[in-house]
Image (cartoon, rainbow, N blue to C red; front, side, top):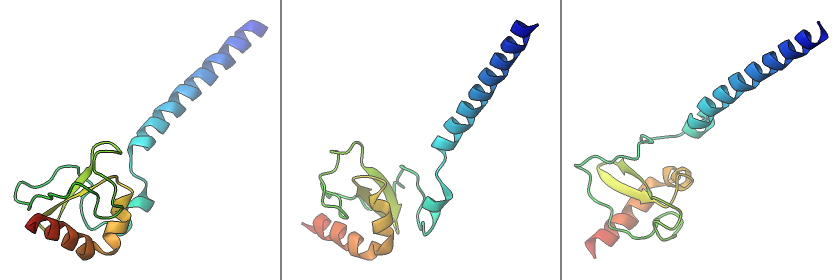
Length: 110
């Protein structure tokens, strides 16, 4: 009888851990609501084909070379393609997007 109780407790614990890890995996893939505050563009990494291409080779926000931190985070802002070195720069971009779009367009004219 004692072993039956032990096996039952072990099975319940295993099921609890499995259920918890499933919930954590789903939560890890979702963006926290705090990151969505002030978002003016979609978080999609796809850009409209009508957007003007971003020809900068550096991040307009941080100045880092694009591609050094992995694939650049790309999105469209008012029909302008924007490439940032990472998603973290998006928050700073949203504070003053016209400043960074001006940098992109100045580089595109050269």
